[in-house]
Length: 394
Image 1 (cartoon, helix red, strand yellow):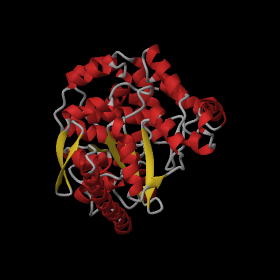
Image 2 (tube, one colour; image 1 turned 90 degrees about the horizontal axis):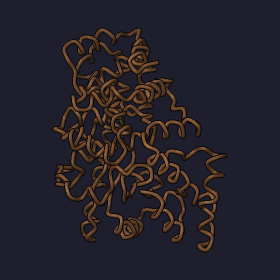
Image 3 (tube, rainbow, N blue to C red; image 1 turned 135 degrees about the vertical axis):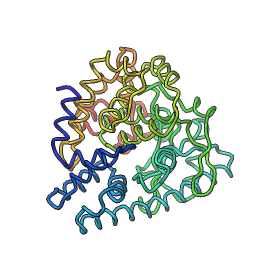
């Protein structure tokens, strides 16, 4: 089944068509009329709410309906969407304030830190933090400052989401790209990154390369540094690939940036080629084009058309996105097959094999080994992958 036939089958359900119409970055007069023609009391509003919530796009859905068809949505359904939007907005304000506080805390300690995703992405892509749902704060620091940044968070009252000894943390800093901490019983969650993704998963964007081309962004009436548009969209494509593009919100992020920012597509294409990450990058662009109606740059159209694997990958992703209101995790075999397909070269695939066998925080949390036996985590990892199959995305 081609990606084109996949999207045709999806929009045959009115709820899917309305959802996609409401979360796209651009809307025409024809699109407005189509939204109004779909919105009716007979519409399955419960299904629409649940699938929008599954994909973390309910704020966008409510905003567009409020603009275009508020008079056609049944009052109880519109009120439900409004309450969800308001709750999300209130939480985002609190999380944004906490993010700015932590960035200032790091600055006082002479630790350069940049917000990544979360409030910064909401402001950058949507120009309104209320339009994106996020539940944690992603902060990136330089690799050689990661230990100091973790220490600062611990002193501030945060704790590791999964208990880690000093030796286990040492393993994690060496094998992974981030660590998660929490505060107030998980009401505040921080993911501290020292890389966008493990260099074995994708060598496309390394943290050390990001610091030379940061740009300023106003957040909570203060100026913060964030990723340049090209670095951000590339990072988002890598992130989406890590998680098999299981949420529409991730595709929305790419689409809204494509529409709202002037991007150097030549540089992006060259980066994809030189780092052997072409398919990860082009898959994100393809999905944004198919589902969000965003025009592909001419430079990439030929590359996308000439790679038949992109059609297979995008078709599989699209089918998975609309298989119900509850997320169904991919199996270990599906994850493995996807990760082989999304890489064109055998060197890139070999790096992924190595990445699979690096211990994760879940491995470290499962068994506490003495420091003299740290090598045991590498021996345990294949067994956990075989029998658990729960963290193949990492």
